[in-house]
Length: 364
Ligand SMILES: *Cc1c(COP(=O)(O)O)cnc(C)c1O
Image 1: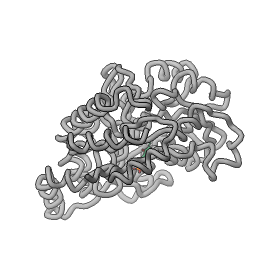
Image 2: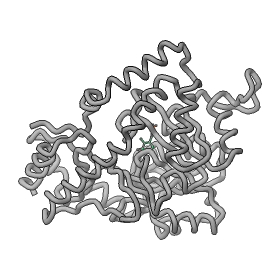
Image 3: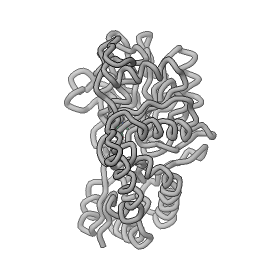
């Protein structure tokens, strides 16, 4: 039996007719960049996140970049971010000329905590990018309180956590900016690159709209150097067709996670730690085990795909090693050696989950 990490063909088989109709609607309209689909998507995601403003852009990476630009973060500023995340989180900091400062993580949830964040703060810290990794919010009440006390800008990297919450407040509604990715493999995925920034402040909304469109808010009037980071209408329409299914798809991921927990109970590995204060949307179901690489090979031999997110923490990446390689972030380093993400997506069947668990148990 084959179990892939993700099966977008199975999703297409389920809701493809609705997506095809949405794509056709755009083709017929002849309107392809910055139009009614994108504007409607912004309203729908803002409502989902529970914030007044959302500005769509070209990717999750651009969302982080534009948020830092709109916040006025630049050269001379330090921006703290966890070392255990995707490279894009730190790239955005480099794009604006600021200095990334890598913090360690909570070893249970793999997220930044107020304690690990506080250890990384210096008088030069200007902003923090909190990452909600694997589909679960970081401990935002304590982090937001600390950042408020220190006068720090808070950017949330919500690329893996759309529709996750902590005590009812959604990912993207805690910070000054919430940055979403709609890369095809995310919980809400486009058919290409797409991203979006949420914010509570009208002035940030105005600035983000200018930045994504060549520094312009009136046709051929350019007030600053901006970018071409607009969302196209085809992607917006695909996302709008999928959005009504998101709650059901998140619930399916949660059901699969519960089944994994049941079938892997007592096995010689650590199951994901859920904080229990809100929805975990299981972008990944990540277990932890000492003989990770051997287990991964054995799973592959049984037809089961798996993923390692992430094998190298950012301070040990070649691009950052020279500057930060001496840093000791033990929780991030240990996680990089031991994490293994198992297949989880809405259309996964119970037979597939049983096969994954049987194959994994056999090699522990
Ligand atoms: C996917 C991802 C990004 C980047 O999003 P893109 O849309 O691929 O640019 C940033 N941060 C995290 C944590 C991600 O998972």
